[in-house]
Image (cartoon, rainbow, N blue to C red):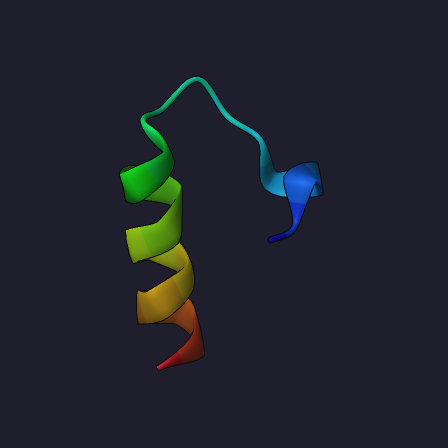
Length: 23
């Protein structure tokens, strides 16, 4: 997990974005 992408969003939102961008 890359903590550098920490944002004021639920962790699942960031995870979803990662999945989409790395798809």
